[in-house]
Amino acid sequence: MQKKVGLLAVNYVVGELAVDVESISNKQAVLKEFDMPDIKGLWEWGHYRKTEKSHVGLAVEAAARTLERSGMRAADIDGLVFCCGDALNYYAQNRILGDLSVRLELSYTFTTWVGGAGCASLFSAILIAESLVNSNTCRNVLVVTVDKIQDDVGRFQRFGVLSDGACSFIVSHSPLSEFTLESVRVRTSAVSLGNGGSDFSEKCQLIYSVFDEMRQATGVDFDNIGGYFGSNVFIPVQELELSVMPIDGMLAYQQNTARYGHCYASDPIINLVDFYADAANSGIRSTMMASSAHGHFGLILLDRKIG
Image (cartoon, rainbow, N blue to C red):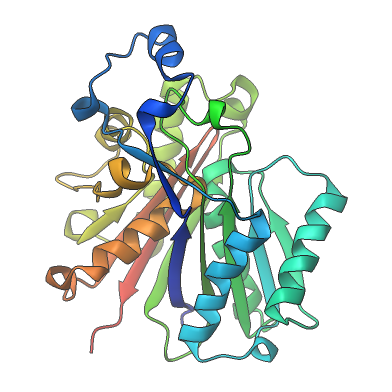
């Protein structure tokens, strides 16, 4: 039986500057356009996080922490999967990948860029990394995701307040891994891609299909999951998506919505890390991460090592 892949040295960084949402110039315009009441307690907007660092600077900060905490050297990393949703061409992507690799002192690695699935891109990256390790193509794959908003005017959206953030971890068979990947499922609806994700019924069908696929593959009882980590979008949006999931009684970790805002693909990892930073949750083993984007939905089932 093949040993399961795990996540090692999971961590994140967010923009070093905490800025009040009230300072965003287009906030009132967006509220008016979408008929949203200006009530902080309803939507859970507080601060967003902004960085003066470059994409690479933010990514290096997260990845360097992962290497340090893992006890691995750069020479131990033979795969790099980098996630970023910015619309950069091949040359711009290569410059970022090259700069990141040089600053981390990586050598010859399998390297790829993932960005086509929006906030679900990180889950696609994890699926790629898992396949690389299970196929013996790579031993230790460093996964990094980073997103940075270039224009503050665009930070306030209908679905959330956008922040700058990054996360990283190593995917491997290492016995030191903190989390075992029990199952990773990411699927895309061609119909939703064509209509920009505006068909809610199609989105519901996509969510149900991913849950069904994971249930059939693992036999998991979703009602026994101890923690759920999704995206830090506005609370009503989170609640709407949770309401259509085929699960009963599952509560989302929502403490970071007002504190950090929506850091795109990094959100589930940010919430996972902060959940286990609370000693009261140290005995919980089975958790689930979910990520949703226009036309894409993913689930990851994790088992945390205890003791």
